[in-house]
Image 1 (cartoon, helix red, strand yellow):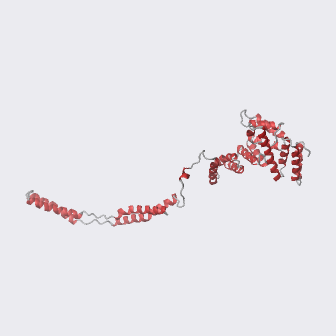
Image 2 (cartoon, one colour):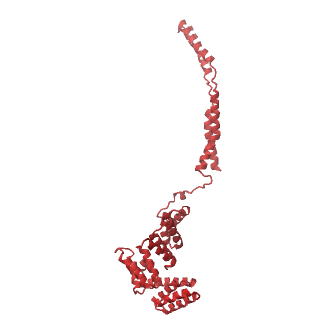
Image 3 (tube, one colour):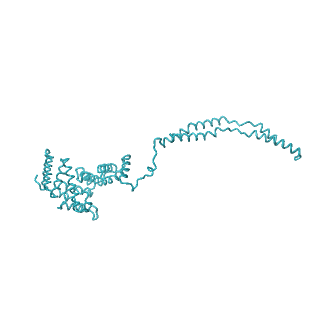
Length: 367
């Protein structure tokens, strides 16, 4: 209310500034004063003549001239404004009284907002910069994308950050939006597949595998997609197929490719190393661990897979990966128990039982 009061006061002052000159009379007040001056001059001529300061002819001439001026002043009528000037003043007055507030209100409603709250100084000074915590920056980008959901560049920037923060579900959504608004590409498809695998605890699910296959269809040389397709084959117990994917990938890879050691380690794993056949999407970090820490990490991955299969026992590929992991780790009893659990979980599904038996044969276990 205080702000509106000041606005009204300023409008009234502007109207007063316009009307004040119009209200002043244009009558000239100088007529009476001029006649008094001329009369004084006549009296003064008489005194000068009596004192002998001027002659009679000069005095007479001066009287004639001053009298003429006095008569002219006495005969002049006051100036009366023309009717046209009166109409003009009235028009200007109406415009000032009505038009000025309407114009001011129109500008304010178009450019201002009476409902807009005050912004604290701290909020005005706050800008997005690298010194802010990562979560704050992510929140600002997410707020921007809520208002501008078709900003493809924003989604492509946000997606890898969400992945780093471990917010896989949000990262999957960001990658899908990036594909939708930036266009399809092998790189974006392989990034999406990687996040889907990460959200499944490193398991290349059928959904993730489909994304890698789309990536390869768009770019046959995509290293990430080919690597994860090999991981998917390895997890299914098809070591030979995994090797057949990774060997050509290494053959055409540049010598300084940053992912080359990762693929080499994976190829060595399927060629007879003692590493379990589980995805290692943190090979770079695991390579710096000691043997005990690496073993702890692998056990954690196996436990997560076993827990997931207890909740959803219809995943035959998952059971085969779990059994193979136990076999590689030397835990044959756990492998046998996992086979029994798998059979119970899919006991009523003949097709899945046949698939399980075929996979167990490839692992050296009876069907």
